[in-house]
Length: 320
Image 1 (cartoon, rainbow, N blue to C red):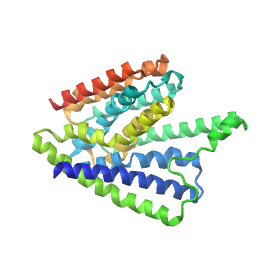
Image 2 (cartoon, rainbow, N blue to C red):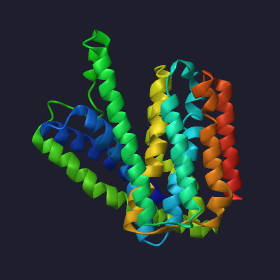
Image 3 (cartoon, rainbow, N blue to C red):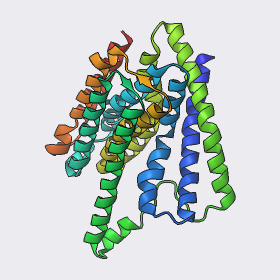
Image 4 (tube, rainbow, N blue to C red):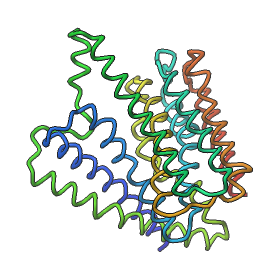
């Protein structure tokens, strides 16, 4: 039953998160919020809602290991698994992508996060620091987008880019469907989080492992499934920029927003094993993107095998 609870909770979380994104995006566009702002904020928060709800619920219910393990494990899985598996299916031509600035910001966010973790506790002070860093990232993204539009100066290709709708946008969606999506998202997210958390905690006890291990593995991989699906489709469509951007953006948001918000709700202590091992694995996995970002290397099938094998080795090390 615990596996069933965890599985059903995960499915509800993912479906509710998708419903919340659709409802929030279309509500925002209907009341006149610019599409650019919707893409950078509403969509980003909405797609990370499952991880956010899991972390907040775990912190409130006295299992902070799952809250922190979910974020650290998701970031490691995003690099090694979410990029590794699609590369097994098709080479990702990351040599054509320009993601240097985003990569540097992600590494800076990772270093900031690890530095704060050595304080032994994520509390409201560290939460405000992380959210302040997130605000700087969003402001920089808005500035870059406006500069890009100004540089286009009416060019057809740029104009097409500007007309691209945010994820989940439907200009013809009636009001009743918007309200329905919002309702399903707001009800489904806490329900799914409770079911997944209850199942995960019981599974940890049955197998004699800590909640932290379950957070780093089962919960982290489960909440990374949307990123994996997006990256697989991007790889098959030869959209390496989408794949890399998805992973880098998700990792930054996990570190700065999810723990930032969750630590305002309830303090999150940092277990010693995070400081000894898991945080450094996360940082090392993030650094593995360096040759693809700065040296213009493609993520080939060989790299896919290496990244996936490294993730398997990490999971074995955590479970042991």
